[in-house]
Image: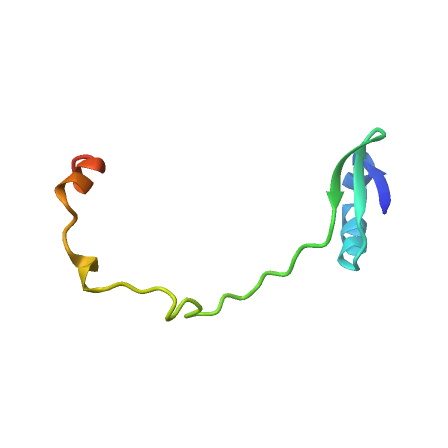
Length: 77
């Protein structure tokens, strides 16, 4: 893993990002103390529409009014 100072990271950021994009890692240090690590980002997973279909449901009581004590717990509406 390559280690660079904050000053080097600021002046060579594009180069460091290209290195990380190829799978490398870069440690950024303040003086000799490591403070941050530059690593490749995780790819964003696509969401599948309807992924929860048939795993979430409700019955006919879903639309019934809430009891008075439940409404009172939420405060005056």
